[in-house]
Image (cartoon, rainbow, N blue to C red; front, side, top):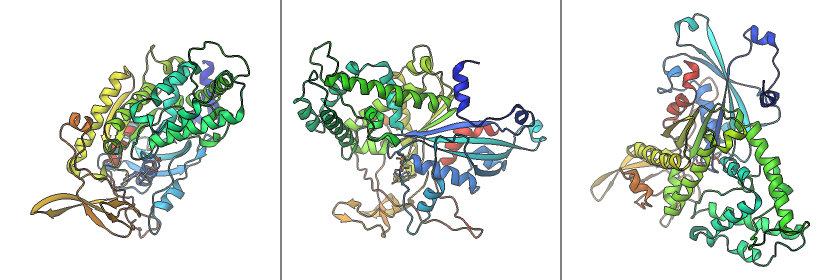
Amino acid sequence: MPISDYTRAAGDAFYSVGDFAAGLVAPTVRLGVTGLARSGKTVFLTALVHNLMAEARLPFFDAAAQGRLLRAYLEPQPNAMVARFAFEKHLADLTGRPPHWPDSTSRISQLRLTIEYASNSFWKRKLGRETLHVDIVDYPGEWLLDLPLLGQDYREWSQTALEQSEAPARKQAAKHFHASLGLVDPSDPADEAVVERLSDLFKDYLRDCRADPHTLSTLPPGRFLMPGDLAGSPALTFAPLDAKGTSQFPRGSLWAMMEQRYEAYKSYVIRPFFHNHFARLDRQIVLIDVLAALNGGQAAIADLERAMTEILACFRTGSNSLWSSLFGPRIDRVVLAATKADHLHHKSHDRLEAILAKLAGRAMARAEYAGAEVKVLALAAIRATKEGEALRNGERLPCIVGYPLPGETIGRRRFDGNEEVAIFPGDLPADPEAALKGWQGEMRFVRFRPPNPTPLPSGGFAAFPNIRLDRAIEALIGDRLA
Ligand code: GDP
C-alpha cells in the first residue's frame, strides 16, 4: 500500500478485520458540499439531511420514489479532528418564530448521515436491508481557488495578484492598498507592522470586490476572506509586493518576510487541506449563485467564470494536472448547481440551468477539463416563495410571492419582514448566450425570509418545499443506493 493511503486511513476510526468480515462496516460515500460565500451551502446541506430524515416526497430520487428508502439518521462522524456541521442549530433557526436563515459556512465541518435502504437488485434484496454511510463535508469554495498557488512562487503570485488588482472592475476597490504599496520598498528591513497593514488593506480590497454592487468572485488566497480557525495567524498575514525588476532581495527584508509567509501558507494551509480533506472525497456538489452574478453585470459574470474555471481545474485528472500529480484524485462525479431558483418563476428554471451549463462548458474548455463526470442543474434547497399571477396594465404576469427580509427595498418601498408581497421577477432570456453577454433585463432580486415551518403531529417539522433538490440527491448518491 502506498504511504499516502496509510495517511488517508489515519483520519478515520480504525476498524478491525473482524468488523469487516462480520459485515459491521457499511460502505461509505464521502460527499463534499462547496461553493463561494453565500452560495447556499449551509441551507442546502440542512435541507438535504432534513428531507432524508423526515422521509419527504422526493419523486426524482429513485430510492425514495420506489419506497426503498427505509430510514435515515445521524451518527457520530468518524473524523474527530473536524468540527461537526451544526445541523440541529441550523434547523432550529429555520423552524424558529419567525424562521430565519442560519449562519453561513465559514470553516470546514462534517456530518455522518446513515441511510438504510432496500437494494434494487433481487439478489441483494434477499439479504435484507442495506446500509450506506454518507459522510458529508461542508467547506468554503474559496479554499479551492488556492490550488494554482502550489505551482507559483511568491514572485509569480505577486505579479498576478497586482495585475488583477489593476483591472478596471477592481482598481477602485484596490485604491488604498495601492497607495500603501507605493510607500514601501521591498528591500526595506522587515517590519511586522508594515506587513500587517499591507495584509489588512489587501484583505479589505478582496472583501470590497466581493460585496454588492460588484459581486466579483474571490481571488486567492482563499483563506484571506474565509480564514476558518486560522484568522490572525502569520501564515495568513502577507500581501503581494511589486519587485520592480529587482531579482534578489536580502535576508531580513520586507520581501523575504512576505515570501516566507506565502510559502508557509502553501505548506501549512493549502497542502494539508487538499491532502487530508479534498483528496478523500468521492462525490462533490458545487453550489453557484448564478443569479447574483447576472445581477452584478458583465464583470461579475466574467469573474464567476474565472472562479469556476479554477474550481473545475481541481477536479481535473490526467498527467497535465497539478492536482492529480500531487494528490491523486478520487472524485468520480461533480454536480454543479445554480441555487436560489425560487427567485424565479418556474418558467425560467430550465433557462437558469441552461445558463449554468453554458458557463460550465466554457469554464471546462478553459480548464482543459477531463475527469469526473459533471452534471448541471438549477435548484432551491428551500423554497421561500410561492407562485402566483398579477395583473399589470391588463396583462397577466407570472409572479413569485414571499416575505422580503427586513430592510429589503423595491424602489422606494422598504420591507419590515412581516409583509407578504407578489413580485414580478422578469424572465431569463431563452438564449443563455444573451444572458451571459451582460444582459440587464427586468429582473429584480429581493431576499426573502424562509417559509413558515409546518409542525408534524408526531413532533418535529415537515421538510421544507424545495425545487429540484431530489434531482440533486439522485445525481449525487442515487447510484450508491441501487
Ligand atoms: P453559504 O455561505 O454557502 O453557507 O450560504 P448559506 O447557505 O448561508 O446561504 C446564504 C443566503 O442565501 C441565506 O442566508 C439565504 O438568504 C439565501 N439562500 C440560500 N439558499 C436559499 C434558497 O434555497 N432559497 C432562497 N430563497 N434563499 C436561499
